[in-house]
Image (tube, rainbow, N blue to C red; front, side, top):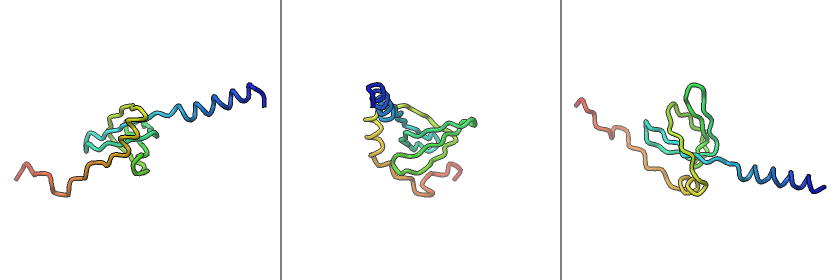
Length: 95
């Protein structure tokens, strides 16, 4: 291989490894936070992502998206999410 070919291969590998975007996505309705590198915005305003903690595909009708550093992403995805509230834990304001 020539020098140009090696340069092109090196550049392509750097771009693949170094061009990842990291996101912190918050569902304002539930307060749940997701970390992802795979985020797709729909025309309807909804967002689809792959949760880095669980590997699950998540669809959100409303979301707040923030770009974060790789360090923030790694720290966030390795932090356990807060426990979900048990059913019926919310007070009924009409009692």
